[in-house]
Length: 433
Image 1 (cartoon, helix red, strand yellow):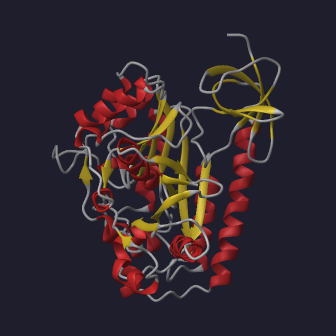
Image 2 (image 1 turned 60 degrees about the vertical axis):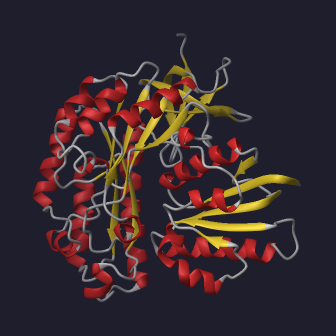
Image 3 (image 1 turned 90 degrees about the vertical axis):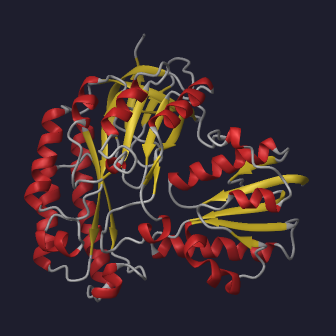
């Protein structure tokens, strides 16, 4: 145990992870030793960065806080701080519930934590991070907040209005990360496709992606969390023409039934969604689409659910996740829509939907057998080198298990011939460069 050591625990999404990395850089500049998500905490200070998106995430965050609050009685922890989305929304309630926490911070005032420890916030380091990811890839947060009005979503209540970073600020961050060895950038925001509307008075994601792609050393750019309504179609030529922009798009659709889309306040119809997907696939041949779907929204009928199943079968998404509706207090649906679908039915629908998707994904993976794909190596285990193609984002997508028939370096790209397909991963062997 060290008396000048801080352990940071991050829960939730990659946007939270970026906040933790920014905080870690400031701690390091102030002379602290910092560890992130250690198997066993050893610091005298613990910071928990919480998630407050849906019920399960909130429960996980509260349990984690309670665990460390209890640990203060028997372990070395002298200070316990909590920050992030859950704390932003329920700060006063948490103060009463868990008084063992020294202080609760929200999502945006965590800089106060540094001054509360009697240390300095270094403005000149405000764009620098201590990466928690492997050194060859990083998440790049281009905006905060959300201006959409989806009925079920609590994010705007937590994060407020959409606030874009300037292109120049993002370019500086990318150049700094490239100098650290980062080659692959996962662009993230609550809604990528709204980027620039607040500061440039137009959707400006295409320009941002083009300018990032022109920076020397940027090998891959991957786009997460697009929104289908008012999708910026000028992005598609950039994705098609720029070799270092991955043919990959994460675009959350949530449902296909017009009745459900209207109740969810998605401001798009099924036919408009289908046309958008067809346009994306036509404009960017070979693109892999990741999406998420929600089952069991209040009022979802068997007909609505059958529509969703048929839609997924027809669209054949390369990547798809699903989750059951969870009522979040303060949202439009919590106020106006009674949660009418039984919990067991929600689970049955989600399981069936994911079984359908599993078969689709397996067929898509098997079609890659015999192809040679460019693969970046993430890590090595006892039996394989493990990497990803441009169609695969870290943590959430399939990996490529590569036979150890030659020495490979982590963070380097190699041509890999796909020799087999498992349920979720591909098998491959390297070719000579």
